Length: 165
Length: 180
Image (tube, rainbow over all chains, first blue to last red):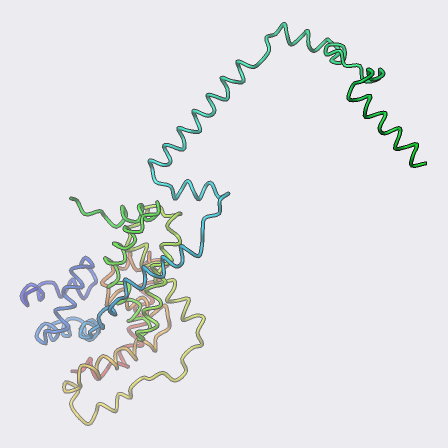
C-alpha cells in the first residue's frame, strides 16, 4: 500500500473498522513507515505504538510439524471396528452410497427368500394341529431295532456298566 | 479452478480429507502464529499453542457445522487454548518488564526497535489473560468488537470494558513511547 492510501484508512484502522486483511496491510505498512506511524500516533496513540511493533515470522517448518503431529495423532487413535457411526462419518460419499445400496439389496433378497420359503396358510394349520412325533414317525420310547446303531450303543453301554460293577 | 472457501475445506476435513487440512494450515498459520506469539511473547510457547489449535480443530472436525466463518471458529479455539494456558500457569509476579527509566539517558525516539518491541511485549505480558487477548485481537488482528466477542465467548459490551481496562493499564506503562 502507498502512504496516501494508508493515511486515508488510518481513522478506520484506529476504530477497528477495516476488514481484517486490510487492517493487516495497513499495520504492516505502519510498522515500517515513520511518517504514517506519526500520523496514526496523532490519531490514536496506543494504536500507533502497537502498530509499530513487528511480529517475528512464522518459524520455518511450522506447517510440516503441525501436519506430522496430525498424522501421529490419527495413527494413535484408530477408529474401532464397531464404531459404525464413526466409519459412516469418515467414509467418502461414493463408499457411503455403495454401502447403502448393498444394504438395501440384501434386505430385498432376504425378504424375497423369506416370502418364498414361508408355508402357505393351509399347510401351516395342518402342521400346527399335527403331533410332530406322529408326523415324523419318531418313536423315541420304543425298543431300538436289532442291528441298528442305537441297539449297538445300548449293548455297549450295558456291557461297560456290568463290567464296572 | 475455483479456490475452495475455508468452510468448504473444513467440511472436507470432516470427511477425512488430509489435503484439505494441509491447505487450511498453510492459509492460517500466520494468524495462528501472530496471536499466539503476541499473547505469550515466547516463540516456543507460541508454536505449541498455534500447533495445538490446529490439532484441536482437526479433532473437532467430525462435529463441525459451518454456522460461523472459519476464522471466527479458529480464533475461538486458539483464544480458549491461550487463556486456559495462562489460567493453569501461576501468575507472573516479577516479569521481565524493562524499567522505563532505563530509556531516560537518551531520547525515546532513539530507542532501538528491539527495545521498543521488548517494552511493548512486556507491557502486554503484564495484562491479565482476557485483557491481553482482547488487545491482541483488536490491535494486532484488527477484529471488530463483534468478532472479538464471538472469539472470546463474551458480549460486545464486555469486550469494550476489557479493552478500556487494558488501555488504562497499558498507557502508563507505554508512556515513554506514547510521548514520542
